[in-house]
Image (tube, rainbow, N blue to C red):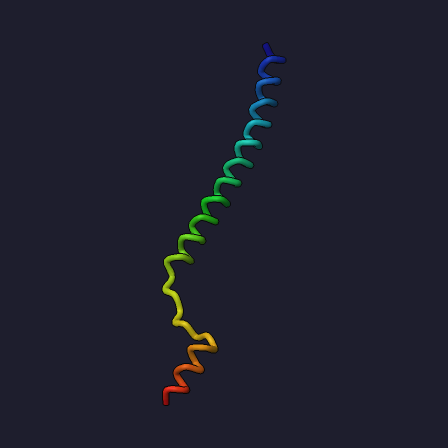
Length: 60
């Protein structure tokens, strides 16, 4: 019986390490999705291309 419990403890220790690694990976994935959604929600800056500057100065 003691051998069985020792083996079960080793399996549980290994399984806990795998579960922790999976949880950590899912946390990084969740954080990445949060960052992407937060960046998309930011207001877009006005268009400051060279053509817009040339057109506005030509009309003066």
